[in-house]
Image (cartoon, rainbow, N blue to C red; front, side, top):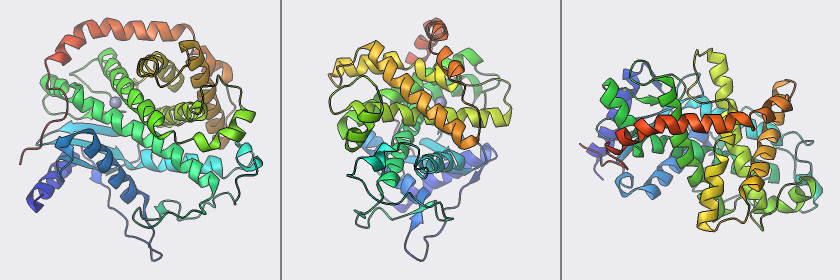
Length: 374
Ligand SMILES: [Zn+2]
């Protein structure tokens, strides 16, 4: 690809940021020891995932991707001369720090160390937390098992976030917003004023979540990234079993709940009058039927919907417990579990009602990836 195309992609990205009053995140230089910024690795990873998803994104500059320097756990999808995805810096930092923070505490998931197969010290939280070994360097086989689990959880969470943004582009959400409200970006946290009402926005968000979670479980099935933790994990947790994917299903829900929960925390801090998503537990509970259906249809799992509900709610509650513990809050398990009953059916009913008018509008929009224009 020519330099012009790359420059065009950069320019489009900068323009979109400027339009929203955001600053582009300046990539930190590598450390003297050769370690590179976590953001460098995330950027490469995301571009590779996007290239795998669509031929339109496979050439350099086919999609604009980058980070915004801002204090919110946020992201946006936009389409100008090309498709564009922007993640805000805290979304990456807080997930990375959260998963590493958990693993630094020996009393959390003690079975990791108990099984005898795994050795090593918990990761130290030094100032270098956000610098990592460059991907082209040979893997360090001695990497501590706890750090490895933290990274696998982060990868799952990142993959979900990225594909959620892809859904806003591919399922016509961004195009619909443009049709209603000129050139706005589809933003996660900030409610779209004017063009779309809150129930429409929430339904679009549910549509993006459903797309992303099906992709997340496809990836989980394919890579089975948590299989190696099964031995100790299954001794310690009573969850419905599903062959050698049991542990992976659990941790996939765990990682995705963490995304929802940290996102909520940021919405709370920003004191938003209306949220674009329901609270984390309800948001997660609404997605269980999608996962159960896709896994049954594809033959990825033998779990029935009730068993899926148990795996997902156990994982979510554990993530909730750990967030509370790290933050020094009291866990309210009843508040978490109460969202798993009646409100789910009601919430899904709301989505379906909105969908009756929304579905046909989206069907008229360009779907899927769009090729970049110069
Ligand atoms: Zn969204």
